[in-house]
Each structure stands twice: as structure tokens, then as C-alpha cells.
Image 1 (cartoon, rainbow, N blue to C red):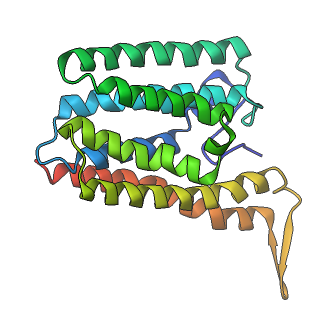
Image 2 (image 1 turned 60 degrees about the horizontal axis):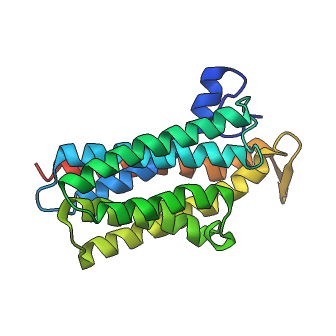
Length: 232
């Protein structure tokens, strides 16, 4: 069975798609947009470069290191290729951040340091407390919202903090659905669950977790787009 509903490993293209986790990457990049949309007049170029940095950090670096740590997806990328992807992503992201620090605010360097800590520490499970449900939600839910908002405004607000908290809670929902779904995928071919006289196959049970995940992976980007459009 596929390692995820969007993953079809076995070819270079399939391995790359699986590695990048498109639905989840778009979901969490949407939190950057949601945070940016809390600004009175968000800058689209600045948002674009912020999304580039987050894509390199989360979409490429963190996912490459996660695959390096235990091969959960079973891709055919070599250890060297995964390390190269992570290193190149960090290098390009660092260039963008440095330009932002030179032209806008040196505080960008602090945000980048926190982001690098999360992008490397979470997949490598260093420290251990980061690789928890709450650590996941803070890293990929709360942090993108706060970073997106601050980069646009160079300040914090209670509204942005509340929106960030909602992203944290949504990420906890994501985790509560994806963890059992991932475990069931490893035995879905033989799993059976009986409800009185009704018997569910593993694929039916899996759908009870993956269908909400699919819908949420579409809902959050659409919400982000709507909030951003309302600013213009």
C-alpha cells in the first residue's frame, strides 16, 4: 500500500512527490499566508519570498531529513541525495533571509534561526521534546502564522497570536488524524474491525481518518486565499 494517499513511490517523480508531501506542505505554507493577511496592507513580493523560504525549510529540508531518519516513505533517494537536498535548501533559504536582513530588518536573522532549528531539529528528533504532537503543532502551525505576520508588520498583535493559536489547534487535529492513519496503512490490507454485525475492511477504517485530512488540506489553503484576497 502507498505510504500516503498522495504518494506513489517507485519512480523518480513519484519519490519526489512523496518526499515533498504536497497537500501537507501547501497546508502549512497557507499558515504563512494567513499570518500575512492579518497585516493591514500585506506586501505580495514580501509574502512571496517568505513562502519561498518556508518551502525550502519545510517542504524540502525538513522532509528530506525526515526521510533520512528511518526511511518512513521508502523512497529510493540515497542518503547523499537527501543530505544534498537539505543542504541546498538551507543555503538558498539563507541567501534570501540575508537579503531581507540587509534591506528590511536584522530581526529576520532571529526568525531564520528559529526556523532552521525547527526544520532540522524536528525531523532528526533533536531535542526529543520537539518531536511531539505539541512540538509539531507549534513548529508547523503557530510559528508560520506568527512569522508571516511579523515579517509583514515588524510587530506582534493579539489578533495574530489568536490566529496562530487556531493554527496550532488545527495542526493538533491534523496530527490526531494522520498518526493512526499512518499506522493503519502498514496493516490496512489485513486489518478488520467489527461493529456488531458489520465488518469494516482496513481501507474503510483508513478513510475515516484520511477523508478529513484530504478535506482539511484543501480547506486551509482556500481559507488563506480568501483572507488574502480580502486585503486587496
